[in-house]
Length: 293
Image (cartoon, rainbow, N blue to C red; front, side):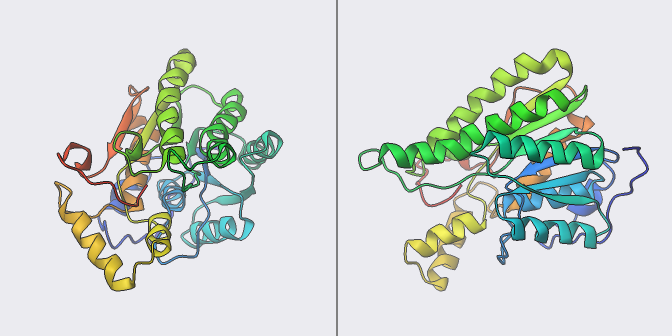
């Protein structure tokens, strides 16, 4: 790709109205692959969807990777409606062949690959004593091994000034009570350092972004599963926001903004780092675990 691709127009983020203007043009001419980027057809954007849309708005051509073809196409449609470039790449992260095909589709469609964001994840329901081996391994297969498979397939195609961003979780530092999920995210923190050291000489930067309890479809579904009514969910969100030093509920767009920074040349001397995007939540003494990321 040449650098002539203009950033999409018209992105509106009600929660963060300045975000669109700040993002414009920062990834012009770049090609990005984002896993778990399908639009869940929910009133709340997922982290992967927000990342894909914001990177496209910043000027990148985006491969929207998801196991759900319809969800991937919805994200592609939103990007193209805004004037951006995107393709849907169907992939099951549990399959090495499927992942390699998605990476090949991206490179052949856009002629390059500069940014890889591993945002796909599943939220298991395993506690320490009642978790079966199969349940834990199923979560690790997507969240951890899926990230490794994508990175392994993409690395040979990445040149200098490329960027990989793994989406972790505050749950790796402060428990939400989900053994399998938190174990997978803690492992991602470790491979950020390993990959950064291993591929730094090639000019590939590898970083992590660990969200706090931002409002996402995953978190909302969890609260519904727990039997909360709409009024109870809203009260829960208000209480949770008050417990964060910034007194603001985080959104998928806050995570996407951090990813954009790390993917851009603004972060060209940053690698091997894990950025906590949590409104200061990780520093609160007496923090109480609740359903979240």
